[in-house]
Image (cartoon, rainbow, N blue to C red; front, side, top):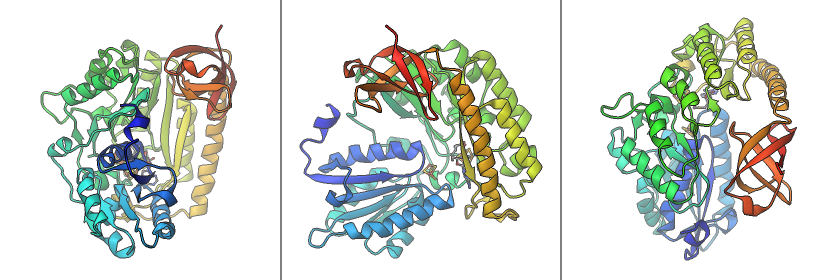
Length: 447
Ligand code: SAH
Ligand code: SF4
Ligand code: F3S
């Protein structure tokens, strides 16, 4: 059923706000699918909604406080007479559980990262005035059988979850505590989903997980991630494959080779380094050295010279000296990231790093962050300018930024806007890049 018609018969409105990573974006889509069965259609207007849900993130302190503020603001939507349901899910919900119900008396629902399947029942209860919190972990593969599906959204590009959770316990990171143990989905289920999406007209698959490249390593009789990519590539109708996020320590030679021998695999990889200093990497428990990281990057560039590498960096980790920080800058100069997501370290209660002494003040960390961002801006500009004049194949996904423009992604993941008719949406078009902006390209269709 087309996306719009799917909600045509529904008589209640759901407003959902999503924070954090792609895992949460994906979970929100599942929630929308599930609650359609209860009569809820999505809306962008919280004041018109019968139910407001926040799907939250707790990876950094700031993100968490944002949720508390938002919850405090939402109070104004709790109308007299017809009471609106307010719920919190995701990683803050997982962490705080019942406490949230106590802190916010107008909150009705709290659901953890493993409890999406309970949501229909919880919402029915809330409609009768019940308040409920469910945050029990399901750390076995039963979790995967309870994994609600996403239906009927006709888009060209779709995320397909291949694994959930994380067992790495990087010393700064809350994710293993709020997402639970790492579990790989059965390859047969993944491939069935990919085939179904291909039948619906989906052309690009983004394989999704906290740590996609450790896929299958802990499961008997399942392929590893490189093999899984080959299997997805065999599905007719799928023309592009991407994946996120991969961990440098699990970046096998077979996976690197895929960038050379799987034509459908796009030339883009998100490979977070976190730091360029061995001392800091060790404290972070990342499981690789700076040299080992750079070696993987070298091999990737050998197999796919134009590969667009993106990454994450944390600045101001406890004990990070000026020399450590400068090693991060030199790593950036060597890798030459297309884009970099950089974060000021924030201690997360319960993690190992939270026990370490922090010597840097917040403003000292910000100074480092700004230096890093300045360097990255220059690198991004230099890389993108090199694309001007080249021809890129664009998968046209929708209307562009300006009237008369259409827009899509180049193989390297950059957005390209160009003049064209919306009848081209859904096709692959050769586009010459004529201008590079910080976050996108402007192009013109080849005649
Ligand atoms: N699974 C992914 C990342 C998940 S979290 C991976 O392993 O790369 C996304 C990013 O948030 C991380 O890569 C890291 O750069 C950042 N991050 C995580 N915990 C943080 C913390 N305590 N302070 C600052 N940044 C953090
Ligand atoms: Fe967090 Fe590390 Fe797991 Fe990524 S690999 S989610 S940074 S613990
Ligand atoms: Fe945030 Fe949870 Fe994702 S903490 S980054 S929403 S896994």
